[in-house]
Length: 195
Image 1 (cartoon, rainbow, N blue to C red):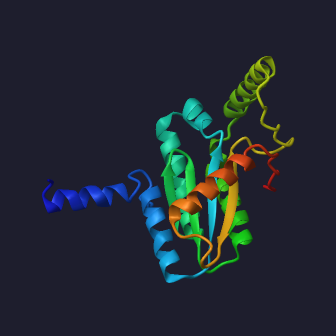
Image 2: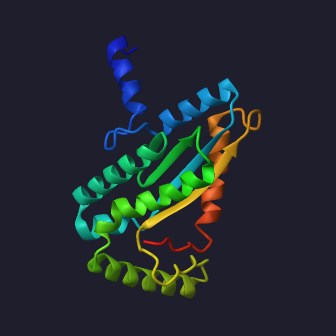
């Protein structure tokens, strides 16, 4: 059995993302479980950064880390944010209209990472999309819809959920619903945001 001090530190580190300082997925679920116990309605915004791996490929992992930190800071100014790892984030919306926070989050993401959308990144993305489409066509796989002309290469797919009192018993149930909604959202066309 671990001594109490290291165990407490280990558990604390599991609840906080080391790169961004935001709560991790476990920390987010804990906050949601707390809101469920209180019995209040709340909203959730789940964000998945689109094509974010291109930042690492073109600008390097240090730039990718800086971009993730920028996104984390921008989102945390809107509502309590958390990072699930990789390029997924969540917002817990207690006081504001959910749709307004979702739109603001999408704009905040684009603004936080727009400096990384260079000509080299756009060229890399175009070549990658062409290759992916030819592979999908060859094997009969479901293709992702093409983004609208003029849409940024980098951005976020977002889904929201309004959790009404008594509708869910655990954060895990909510997370399953959000994940299913995200999978569906990734298969639908993305609307271009004004710059």
